[in-house]
Structures are given as C-alpha cells and as structure tokens.
Length: 206
Length: 314
Image 1: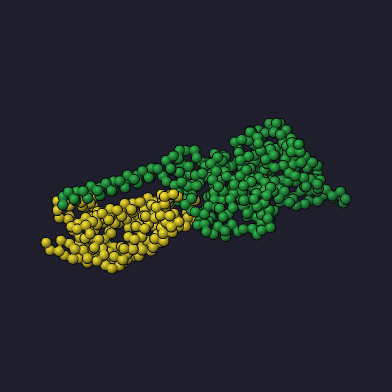
Image 2 (image 1 turned 30 degrees about the vertical axis):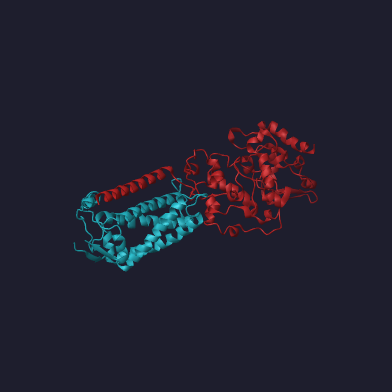
C-alpha cells in the first residue's frame, strides 16, 4: 500500500498545541486538587496548586488569544467551521466507523486531507472545545482571579459560587474532551502514529 | 458580702422585670431610663450653671453616648440603667466620686448561674482568661471591652441571621479597638497594628474581611461552644489557606456551625453554606459530583470497551 506524507501541522500550530496541552494538563491536575483539597491527604498542596493553576491559567489565556487570532488570519481557521447541512448524516457515518467499520478495516469515511484535517466528529468536538468551552473557562477563570469584581448575588445565590461552578463544569468537560482526544489520537494503524504527526508536522496516510 | 450587695439590685430587677417587658414585641424604653437617655442618648446635653444662673449646652463625651434604639433592642434592653450602674447616678450632677467606684462585671450576674447554662458563661470566662488579651492586659480586659452591654445582640444565635450579618457584627467588635487608636490605647501604649498591612499576605483581602470573622483564624477550635473566646497570639493564628479551603474546612466548626441544620455526614457543605458564600475547595455539590462521576465512568467505560474490541479484532 502506498503511503503519502501530508504536511498538516505548521510549526506555529505545533508549538501552540504543545503549550496548550501542557497548560491543559497542569490546569486539570491542579484544578482537581483544588476542588477536592484535603488537609491530610493533599494531591498537590493547596497553596502550590493555586499558584500553579493561576500561572498556567494566565499562560493558557495568552495561548488562546494567539490561537484565536492565528485562526482568524490563517487557513487553519477554516478547519473549525461547521457546515450545518448534512451534519447529522456525517456525524452518524463517522460514529458508525468508530463503532464497527474500524474493526472491519473499512475505509475511513472522511480521510484526512490537506484542507480537511478533521473528520466530522473531530470538527464538532474541537470547535466546541475551542470556541465554546475555552471561552467559558477563560472568562470565568479570569473573573475568579479578580473575585472582588464579581456581582455579589444573582437571584440570591453568590455570584462567585455561580462563576466557580460554571468554571469547574467547563473545566470538567474540557478534561473529558482531553481524555477522548488522547484516546482517539491512538486510533489508527499504529497507536503512536498520530502522536508522531503532531510532533513532526507530517501525517502519513496509507 | 460586698459582691452580694452589688448584685442585689440586679437580682431584684430580674424578679420584677416582667412588668417592664414591652408589649407586642415592640421595644419600649424602660421608664427609669428616660432621664438618663435625655443626656446619654444625645450628642449634646444642657446644664444649669447655678453661679451665673444660666443654662448651657455642652457636648457629650462620645464614649458616654448610648444608642437608645440599640439599647432597647439589645439583650439588656429591659434593664434600668441603675441595675448595673450605681443608683446614685440618678442624681444630677453626678457625684465625682462615682467615677472611681468599681463597675459590675458581666460575670457578677452571669457567672455560676444555671439560668444561663446554655450560654456557657463560665467556660467562656475560662477561655477569656487564657486568651492573648487577658494575658497581655490582665483583669482590665473585661467582657464589655468587646461586647458592649448597652447594645449587645445575639446575632449568631438567631437562626434567621445571614452569614454576612454575623461576620459584620462580629468583626465590628474587633475593629472597635483594633481600628480605633483611642480605644486601642485604653489598654496599651503600643503603636496600633495596621490591620491591612499585617494581613498583606492574605489573597483577596477585602473578600476575606467581608466573608469571614477575624476569630476564624485568631481563635482555637471549640467543639462545645459556638464561638471560641480563646483569642490566640498572632503567631498562632491560622495562616494555612487549606485549613479553611478544604473538604474538612475549619469553617464548618466555626462560622458555619450556626447553619449546621442539615446532614453533613456525606461531606457536602452546600446545604450548610446556603449559597451565602463560596469557599474554594470546601464547596461541593452532591448532585454535580454524582453527574460528573457518571460521565467519567461512561467515558472510561466506552474507551475500555473500544480498546478490548481493538485487541480482539486485531
């Protein structure tokens, strides 16, 4: 079988992806430690967890702003645009592939192309993560860095509490996305193939 | 014997106080107090100068002014002034020698009396004696230095009180001296510590001051009473954030003790905190926790099944 090398991930994208991954990992670990902090059995000592969470949070914000503008001014932004027409059929087809076709060595319904890096499921998941969850977690996170400015009460519930719950919930869904993202990246001819691609920039298709 | 003579008027008052209780829960001025409040309830008072046969208006010492409404609403609102102050104060001008007479102390009435058992006055007294205040100042540090007997209210024991009311009322007691140089120097010639500066290390200082009491960090934990009165030396104050910001938050044994009406055995604090405050690390919601665990289980379960299928079909 012929293999074709596609240069999919330019340097800036790989650097951003690496930095973002580091931030997300650190934010998830420190976030869990803060949410479930315990005096006797600290996962990460509370004070350290807070400092690390704040530092990586700020880096993640800067990194996101870079990603947002880079997507505005480069072709990469197009990968995150979802066409609504026929979306359900495309999603069903891709889901069927992951559930059955993949095990029967069926051809990929939406093979990776230079201008179409994501399959329909990836596209909707990445777009939701980057353009819905990330803004929510960033806005609430920045607010929690300056809690004095948060509205005192909304419908008799503490504004800080609402902000914190929304922040934790969005962070939780990002961590779910992260787990699935890590696993789906291992789905292929070789489990490490996609991991190598995001480091070298080249995708090898068979 | 001397103590008994001092206490007698107060005991007699307690016996007859039923006649002075206000009707329909509306606080009412005790008749005997009206004369006192004419001067001590106002910023100015009139005085007759016999020598010149004139009346003069003078400024009342602000520390001798008593908020009359606050007095009537306070726990001692049904007391006549002379039940605690010498009856000779009924005569005006007051005799100069009265100023040098010892005043009643709270424990003269409240100490060793089963009537007040629920308030643990004797235990409180022991704790106060061990506190940094009494150690530094001695017996001059009386209950009244923090709890103004004229206007004292049981904010914390009132189940309808909001946490913020409890915090504000309680911190005001500390700031009465620690935020007022004149009162602070009643006890010491030391320079008054600058609270904002000494608490520089505290993140989100303003929020902390608004949402927790000074005593959360500056007292030892007491299981038997709602409030610990053993104020610790500053070196022993809580300075580890995690002591409050954790599942086993110190606050559950202090500030939120008042709100412990629901079952906390599962370790969830939201019912206790009642949406009045948010404490990072201490607030967890039972339902959100269960939902998140379910989503995690489904995610890992799905991945596990897929991995098994990959291995089987390889």
